[in-house]
Amino acid sequence: MAGVIANNYGSFPVVFSHGNGSVLTDTDGKDYVDFVSGIGVNCLGHAHPALVKAVQEQAAKQIHISNYYNSDEGLAFANELLAASGMERVFFGNSGAEANEAAIKLARKYGWLCGGASAVNGGASAAETRNVIVTLEKSFHGRTLATLRATGQEKFHAPCFEPFPGGFRHIRAGDYDALDTVFDGSVCALLIECVQGEGGVNLIDAEWAQAAAAAARKAGALVMCDEVQTGMGRTGYLFASEELGVQPDVVTTAKGIAGGVPMGACLFRGKARDVFAAGDHQSTFGGNPLACAAGRVVLRELRAPGFLDRVRRAGEYIRQTVRGWQLPCVKEVRGKGLMIGVDVAQLAAAVQKSCLESGLCISTAGVNTLRFLPPLVITDAEIERGLAVLKTVLVQTGGV
Ligand SMILES: *Cc1c(COP(=O)(O)O)cnc(C)c1O
Image (tube, rainbow, N blue to C red; front, top):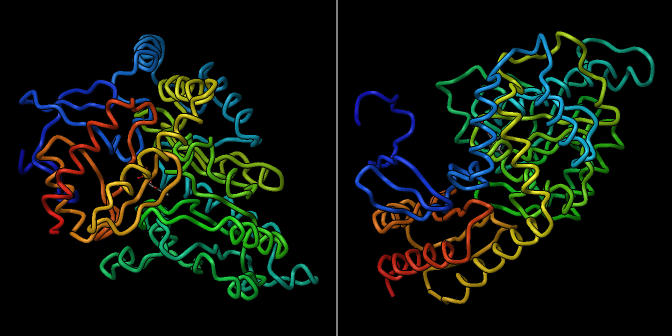
């Protein structure tokens, strides 16, 4: 296992060969309940029959054609996604970071077209271009240089990677005072991660988010939501911004969008709709028919009657159950839908490791936070089985 994959990941010494529903199997035949779903990607679980069928059939027709041309599956998925989301245009890429790069470029061009503060009053200068993007402290937006800089966590700005692109400013979610001062004439967009996944599964207060969006709009800036993790049903809504009461001009999404086939999307509408012109932004693989065929199945499943209700109920059930254990080592349980964070007294990484040994895949978000991102289709029986492992491990590792 050692010596072939770059050192970047620090992966666990387990090798999976296949999965079924929300259970993964390793090469020794041992089963694991999957509360990770590939970091919120395998929203339909493993070996979902409709997804498998669509990918197999599409692979036999056409996998890729480039964006010189359109594909039937690409146009169909774009239409269905726009109809479901209320957005007006979509750019397809291959990952969350790439979707956010598209949003950043769109916002910069929007600002450039509008001009700086004094352009509004007649007479712009280059130095006054509107190019600053405001993001939130504790946010996470990706691993490319620009999205790292957009990320509101110091640990992602390691000096060894300098220079980073400039033009980002961070404010604390919930800080009303910041809203009075941050949106000066240099700001072209506000970018909100609707539930901060990587940063600890932190919920954003809806009233504050609405006030922030209003302040951004008043200053002539775009409102953008990073729904790479929260989007596509994860929080029990197609997009978490719906529940926050924020109507973004730009939304990015990725992780679960095609059920595990790599894909990202940047959706825009209104004054953001026609900012990009031919040649402004492109991607070789973006929106290829294989990914779009998979995306269509995911969207169809998410929109089946009762599907998102079940996501909300299953999430609430997990949170209530973990709280109900009343273990002293469990400090806080929070989340939306099937995006759940549990603060524990012990090191989350140690709990994660013990869970894996006992047959449960679970993720972390920070030193003391366990992160649950199970497949959206996880069954009641799989939830019980996973929670039983977690409880045993917490009792064993949590002291009294
Ligand atoms: C995972 C994630 C990203 C980055 O997505 P990649 O597909 O890894 O590039 C960006 N933003 C948020 C909120 C994420 O959770």
